[in-house]
Image (cartoon, rainbow, N blue to C red; front, top):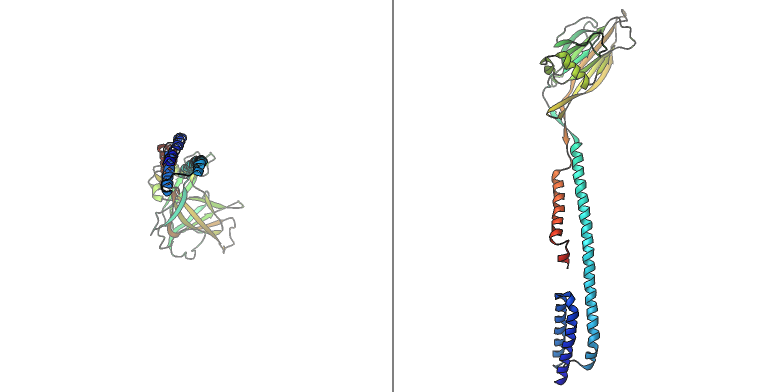
Length: 345
């Protein structure tokens, strides 16, 4: 019994010394001390209550020192792991911030420069376009609408029927000024695309001393808009600044196939024409006046489709919002958890 009492007092002194060392780690070291005490008590009970032997008492300080070294090593490893996790978290937060910045920049860039998407809208008939011709000294001999095919020419080079809507417009500029045009013919274009409507025009240029000859023209989408305008000359001047001039040559029959391209603009729409031209040589059967130049041109619609061009922003604002929400949630979690040190400790 004396040996057991002496052993108990020695163990209690060792435990008291160890508890003073563990006090720097708080509850973790207290739990380890209780674990050591329970282990010793189990050892006492296993020895029949006789207490530890003399060899065990001599080895007790060395075992305690080894135990606390291993415990401190574990604590050091936990602190290193915590610091590593904090560094990883900061790296991930930096990557998330960079991704959010790139997403916002891409969305702003694509909003300023959207991509183009083309759709095709089928129609039964087109609004009658306007055809503006600048014949200068050339004379319009005939103008007629045909459906299906163009019949053989009757008396080419001679005046024929003018069976179409024509308005003649003169420039308001001074005749001595260097203006691109002085006289223009505005003609109502074809409408019935399903019936293959053709507009045939025949011009003649007498006493031509030029090596090359041609007649310029331009197109606009609505002939009715021109007729409803108060000043036809000003209307054509405005068209000249925004439209492309085309031309057809003398001695040929020029076939012009039209396609309408419609692009939405700010509070309006922009209509443009795409043209496919084909020329056929006119075989002149008379050898009379070689200074007379004949012009033939046919306007028709290529197909019953309007090409509608739309501006499309490929970057979705919802993607940007999702990235920002993820970044803000991560920041909120880090701020509430003091960068994760409370949970990691």
